[in-house]
Length: 370
Image (cartoon, rainbow, N blue to C red; front, side):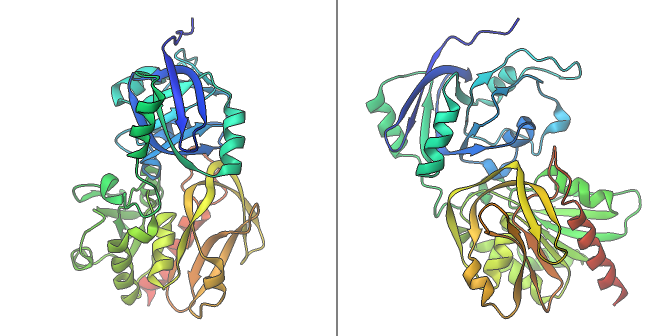
């Protein structure tokens, strides 16, 4: 039998909109930037993606929790979202290999959420009004009290968050046969990115976000990987400085999501906050170099300025989003460096973009031959 969720909960948006429903996860109060994800599966991967730190996720799929949780399906060592908003939350799971329910998982992680609300109406609302801060509570329905707490939730614009999710210590993963050494600057790295590199013969050494470039270079890596991460890229200035120093070494460099934005800023190209951002497993992107289109996994609320790119002498656009023509990929003309705004490691899928890891390997191989 499905466990019934009976505690009342309330969701308050910063524009004053209120939704009433039932609680999920831990009883409590939590706030963050409210955004929606259009993926139909992979909820555990979403909830543990460090790029979602500080955000409350609205799922557009109706049922969440129906296949339980497994330890293999995490992208980091903890749940990263600040809250969940969904239509139907299931404490009962049908997958035989599941290790537990999402409800128990959230309770242990201290995640607060709300279900049994009209998520279609909510998504339409924030689609039109834009991503905004919100607060959810299952311990009080006092709107005045919640308004005061919501006012204390910081805006995502100007917020540096990589320091909150980056590894506190250096660690390594190695394949059976090491072909290349790749230094990873951890701005909120997903574990599947590391797995993709290791599967291709890369020994990866993961460094905290504020590691001095000289310390990374002492390891003598063959190339650099700049990871995804949360927050405003314009506020992540330490990483921009590191990327500039990496580029000066002329070693292969591959950036994903926040790493993509760091590569742009290292070349003097600005980023800006989007109206809603792109979050889901079904975003169409066109590769301008091959003419092929791919379905991609995405999670970002900031984007690189296309106008500045079109006039840049050293950087060119390689990928565009087919929904809104925003920049999805860039490469440098005179250096072995490229990046994409989306997630080619895409766990649980789709896998149209995994070739980008092969492109990085090709750059590493060419660099070693030289």
